[in-house]
Amino acid sequence: DTEVTQTPKHLVMGMTNKKSLKCEQHMGHRAMYWYKQKAKKPPELMFVYSYEKLSINESVPSRFSPECPNSSLLNLHLHALQPEDSALYLCASSQDWADTDTQYFGPGTRLTVL
Amino acid sequence: GQSLEQPSEVTAVEGAIVQINCTYQTSGFYGLSWYQQHDGGAPTFLSYNALDGLEETGRFSSFLSRSDSYGYLLLQELQMKDSASYFCAGVYNQGGKLIFGQGTELSVKP
Image (cartoon, rainbow over all chains, first blue to last red; front, side, top):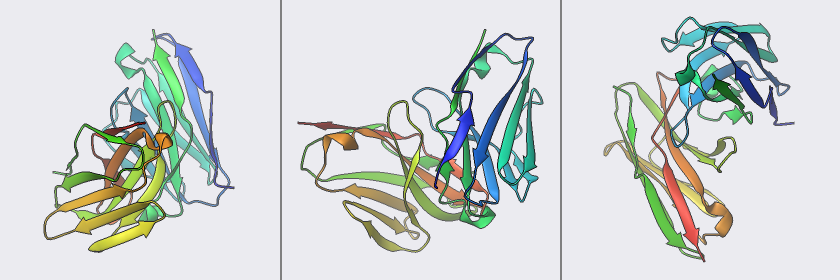
């Protein structure tokens, strides 16, 4: 099983809402990633977790709050977002921190902030 | 800095060979990956080069030259389904950090 799943597929939220994105993998991977991707642009790294600990935060605004409850799950909590945060949010995983070259991506959550 | 440059778009015909180039900044650079992304889909891993030279995987090959800070993805026997965006991505700081180039949109014509 080389699948990374993400829920929901689509999300529309207001600027005052609180919502969460979920990501799951059952490949035994110990590194997990959150990316943001705008249309016709590359994925931009947001956060990296290694062995359930936050290893990299690419200076992401605090309205995005990641959480790794266990080795298979990754959440992204959203609060007080801005319309410019509308994008495709991709989750990915790799065997280990050192295997970041080979990442398995989920299908993404398409987020619209009104 | 940590950035990668690649052409924004390439057009080729079915059955042809196309090469997508990528240049990168060397500070903290560890290796070069390539990903394919179809419209509306997720990025999919294609290949990785940590050492100089050519890596071949079926119709796709990838090359790295550290002395030139340059790599390329070679796609042979192009098929319509190869129409997609192709991203080079640099592994920096020996792990954890994958920085993507701006992407090359490949259009394969009949």
